[in-house]
Amino acid sequence: MVSRRFAWGRVRCGLVRDAAWADAGQGTVEAAFVLPVLLIALLLLIQPGILLYDRIVMENAAAEGCRLLATKTDAFGDADGSCEAFVRHRLAAIPPVDCFHMHDGGCTWDIAMNGGEKSKKVTVAISTKVKPLPLFDGGATLAGLVDGDGALTVKVERSMPTQPDWVADVKGGKNPKSWIGAW
Image (cartoon, rainbow, N blue to C red):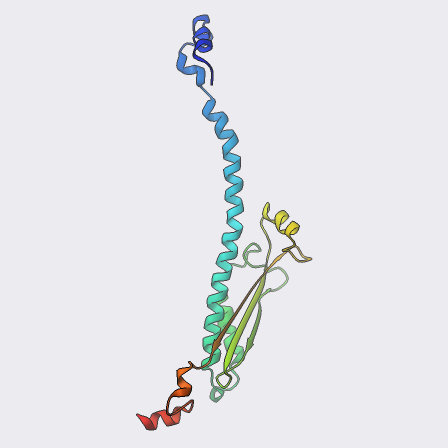
């Protein structure tokens, strides 16, 4: 900030017409220093937001896949393919853009399903690859978070029991036919 004495001297000499002009440009200089820092901070917050969105969609798809596995029945034949197709349909909420989900050379979704209605527990595991954004990729590489392709791997696994614990204690047990007779 220019001292008043110096500014008044410039005004008397005719260099500046008004004393208010003595501080002109200070806001521009401050903005020139602050604006790049704010933009870099904003860019560094975008990648974690993208990864969080991916994880939320993947968690929900895995939970719905577990529900389908727990309720699938052998009466309709092998339903594993339809369960995986349903999970892939739910995962379509993630755009096929490399920073959300790498799609070059084929889809990188890896879906593993275990269990069925006769097992005690069902599990759905989903993983995919994400290309980090600029500025974030250097830090991710230094931290060892990227693989050989320079991509981050996002993994989600969800497990659920096929029946709640109270079902085993019920008079009919796990046999639905005995439930009908009890009603």
